[in-house]
Each structure stands twice: as C-alpha cells, then as structure tokens.
Length: 159
Image (tube, rainbow, N blue to C red):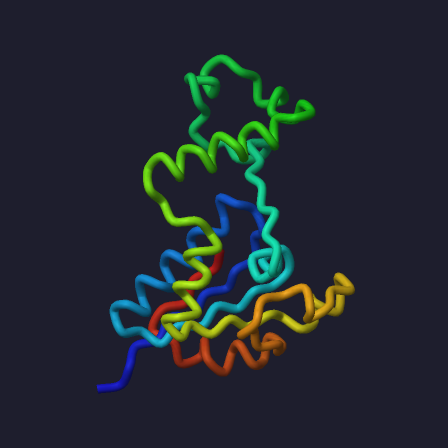
C-alpha cells in the first residue's frame, strides 16, 4: 500500500496562524503520512531562526477576547498602541497555562518526524531575505516543485 501524503501551504506569519501547519503536519506524520509544508509570503516567518511571532486581534473577529471584551470593547480599540503586545502576551500565557507546546517545540518535532519544509525561493528573493536567517533543514524551491508533491497528495491544505 502506498504511503498517504499531506501537502500544506503556510502563508501566515502570526502566532495564531503558526500552530495549524505544525500541529496538523506533525499529527499526520505520526499517523504515517508523508508530509511537506510549503512556506510562502508571510509564512516564511515561521522558518526564521529567531521567532518573534505576534497575534493581532485587529481584523480577527473570531478571536476570543479576555474578560468578554468582544462584547463591550470596540473593534477599533484593538488598533490602539500596545494592544498587539498585550494580546500576544495573553495568548502565550494561555497556551502555556494549558500545556500547549511552543512553536519552536512543534517545529522541532515536525523536523524530527521528517516533515519536509520548503521555503518559496521566489518569496525569499522578493523580500530580500537570506538563507542564513532560516533554520537548518529547509529546502528552497519554487511553486512548480511544490506541485510535484501536492499533485500526488491525498490531502492539500492552505493556511
């Protein structure tokens, strides 16, 4: 029987959007899937050696707000200076309190599970990034290379 394949496209570079590709990818790998994650545009932030990911409540109406703020705090208020830092701190604390692994831990677990990380070379060039900014074990290729894998995947996810 041929091994099942999961192809993930990671396009977001915020703390809240960093979790899905690593959680779903590592779970699929544990279930025996061959997994590849293609990091493009802001998703490249997830491959940096030094992560500085933030969560922004602005433009994220589904985000549960502490103290029922979503009921009484105006959406425009989330754009106030310091709100991004406060929300990032609250999210990190909540995750730690609930025992959720850090992005660094999930990323390392994913690499140990032989998940292939492919950075979009066109986006790396577009944003004048350097390969030295990224963790070891990253492959650099274009969209055509990703389609070679995704074309034969059982499941394809866009995040």
